[in-house]
Image 1 (cartoon, rainbow, N blue to C red):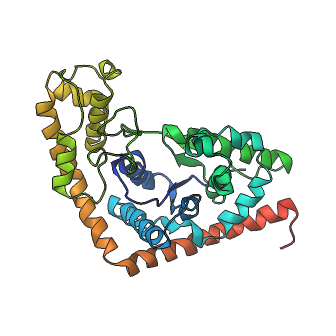
Image 2: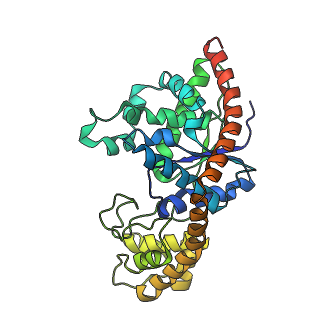
Image 3: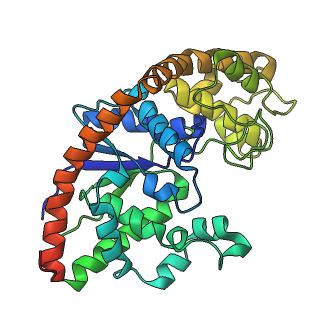
Length: 334
């Protein structure tokens, strides 16, 4: 069976979008519009695997949508919507719960990391959410998924679920989606600790650049980023054991749309007294206009809600076709 060249991607509205979300995901979504049919989702159903304040969840959902729009995603040519408006996600997730094996779920490293020693007390949703993630992708028969390195395991599970469904029912029904991993800084690290991913849960307020930070805050956080006393090397491979320096070079490369080696071709041999102000200037130049656009959208909630509603209506039409076919294959009377 041939499949439409289609991308699906989603971001969880857990509040306070940061530079890692932008460089690791949203920025990479934009150019895919030129080559693929794109569906970009705000995965609010995933968010409630842990407790969310309902008012904050609604605001965070709009914030992700605003970031998609401010980054340059065209909501008329492609689809932007929030997951909970399309019931097919939950319907297909239940079917996939009956296809996936317990052992597959237990191997998910992100579940182990999030649950820790408290695995018996977390929600069933947190344990089963990779099945919902598979449903998100396969409901639209997406052929490609932009992912970071830490999401590859979930996409592999999606492929396993699709393959088992196809095998169980002797149908070539679902595609086996391929990952898209491109660009520098696909994994942005903390500005205060190069061993940790950038996160809103950092103890230091200087560790994370938020997408709604103003120009002064962006520049201050970069200029105060932890580094080492050595100058930048000429070759990117020489930064392998200098994690904070490597992170800053990768951020510069991603913001400038060049390779990390090209950054060092320009700044190799320079100290951070030269490099960090240059990076701060670049970050402000690239992020401040997006910050302004996000705030403009967030000031008009009705506009964002209308965009999400329109996207959900179009997503629902694709989902309805898939679910009708899935129910027929499974043997449900509909």
